[in-house]
Amino acid sequence: MLTVVAGPCGAGKTTWILQELAQEPTSAVYVTPGAGSVPIDATLVAAKFPQVEIFHQQSETELLQRLTAGIPIYLELGFQLEIDVPFLKTIPHRRVALVAEENQDAGWQRWADEVILGNRSTLNPLLAQLWRAPLSGQVFDPPSLDTFWQELVQGAYGEVHRAKGIFDLADGQAFHFDFVNSLLGRAYTELKLPRWVQGRPNRFSGIEVVGHGLHGDGDGPLGRSSTIAATLKDCYLSDSLLAAHQAALKDTLPQEVT
Amino acid sequence: MNIAVLSCIHSNLEALNAVLRDIDQQSVDQIYCLGDLVGYGPHPNEVVARIRELDIPTCQGCWDEDIVDGLNACDCSYPSLLAETRGHLAHEWTNQAVTSETRNYLAELPLTLQQDNLCFVHGSPHSQHEYLLPDTSAFIALERVMSTGADTLFCGHTHVPYVRNLENSALTLKVVHPPTPSLPHPSTPSLPHPSTPLPTLKRIINAGSVGEPRHGRPNATYVVYNTDTQQVELREVEYDYAKTCAAIVEKGLPAIFAWRLAQGLEYAEKADDPTHVCER
Image (cartoon, rainbow over all chains, first blue to last red; front, side):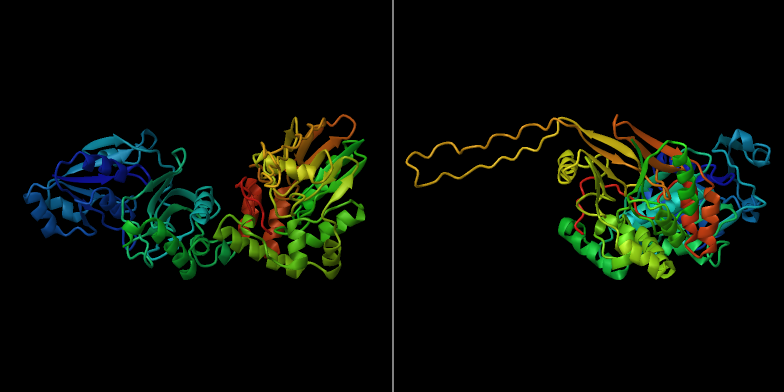
């Protein structure tokens, strides 16, 4: 069965798919078109369920092969994508929308076969701004990243409705950061990936921010230093600092050296 | 006698003027200042001029020292790479902005002021850079107060005001002599008499920050203390912080400072390790 999941920004689409995958006894396929060079959701799914195949594009032939083999497929549509995907017209599928009661006048329920109660979204899609950046190879100083994330979600770089990211930290671990402005607090999840303690990580990390009036990069209204991109750079470990951290880690984690 | 104690103005003239107006309403006989007149904010020379104009006894803060001697703090100054980068930007800006007259004044400030049984320092009697947090080890806290010979130590530097009573205060020194071979009957090592508990209460009073509060609101804080009754009043003063924010941006300081000031967050430094003893 092909399940297509859609909903407003921050409604909980990936979280719902993760819950479904946790109940799948066998392998499954996760398709996330439109993530481009910042596949945060796909990386999260792969880290939590290594047996799940990840497709970044709707490869019709391959997906049909999986469906024929009885492998469940979850296709997550980004909030910025059209829900009328031509490829879906030829394949039977189940449409699931995650929508809060407050957002049910946006037409999602007319499209969906099944509506799941999702998180409230306060984003105006017509004014929505998306800023994202791959960060692969960059390793973060944890307290700096914490300060940056607090500033980001509290509005220092524009009005943020949704922010998520995967970051490599100085101790070799990777963390998933998650923020939805209609929910209390922020979520930080350690990804069960091998600690990276030798050189710069050769795996994906990145950030995606959705909101209004974002100061992403270039010259923000308050100058270049007040942008998301510039602040992130100030949180990176230099080569020498990274080497010092990794040398210390090797003494404490010799069995995990990659 | 009422005294007002203010600290950590950080070049925020709007906040300083608001606090001075509030002090005027409190029947204060004397004002003391615990330093950090400059750093981060947009008006270093104007703040120094105002303090000098009012002839307020002032001790030297860590930022005042850095502008005179250059940066050479130990790890306690910055909790992160980001904070260090921002702190250095602020230092460079301030270093360019201060006049030689301001710099000379900062260089001549004493590290400690003493008035009867009251002592005034910026961070601690040990160093302008050392944080005395509310949960700093009681031993360290008591030792720092007793090293001054005063009963009440006024400090700032943490930017969060507090009063800490060190009751039944006493430091006991225990020295164990090794057995002396020449003695005919080496016995249990002798112990000196424990020191008599000091009868007086020792106290640390942190004045918070006028210009860079870290208590989650942008309001300035300072302290009014009555030397006769030992009553402490931590005062919080609203002011037009938007003016300071605008000046921060206008003068080319990092705009994130304006945002953080408006949130009642520290610009860069943050004292959060009560076990750290400054090595500067």
